[in-house]
Length: 308
Image (cartoon, rainbow, N blue to C red; front, side):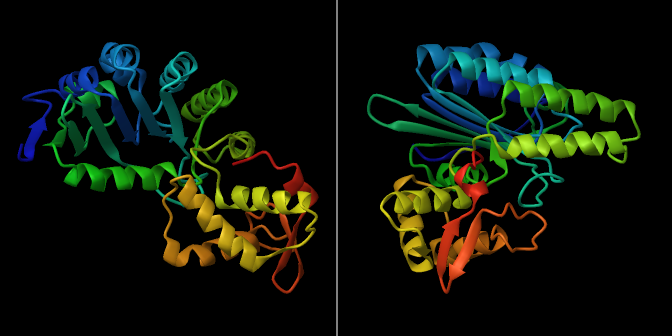
């Protein structure tokens, strides 16, 4: 089958109908959207539930947190699905003020894979629709839909999805985190915004809690800590930079974590410098101590580190 491309607006065919149709058939789905509302989940919930229960589909959703549009009721709904369905994963991408890449998170990507008896069908959707009631049904949105047997466009969009998924800004929220997010969102709506000092204090507390939550994969600093701990158990109290350079790329490949291997040494060295105990970087966590030329040990903070 040749690639079929459709360009649709909600005025002639709502995206919610497309998503429901794809979910009912899918064995795998990946969604990354900037904004999430309970109305968006409600619009596709029955089809989402069917895919998980009847197709045993593996489904992931990544949503942005902005303290404006994304509501805590929607986050709780996804958390409930995650608690009851082992094949469902749910992540958040931190707000620009708090994320680790200083990015405005604004994608609207929907990927579906259907395993057929003789081949696999791939459907990719990209456009302007967020996972909200308006975005899926009533807003004037425009979206492009690609249906393929050979995943040309699907593979390109999945690579972008994975680039999102494996950043340090992505984390799996706890119910306590979602509750606090909802409380802060209400306070922001009632006040003059983020300039309120009490809100700033709450935001910092939330950021500290966020750092302790698991991500889609271990961060570089987490993997370095794990490796040095393993070497310590073998009796090596100091670990060389060369051995870190050698081991971390291997672990990235083993875990299928996408990373630019041509610059991986710079990335590793950047993490070590940023989190070195004498670093003056504003986000330094003082995890590593340089004990000699190209030699590192863990600080007490690193030995008890629980973040991603």
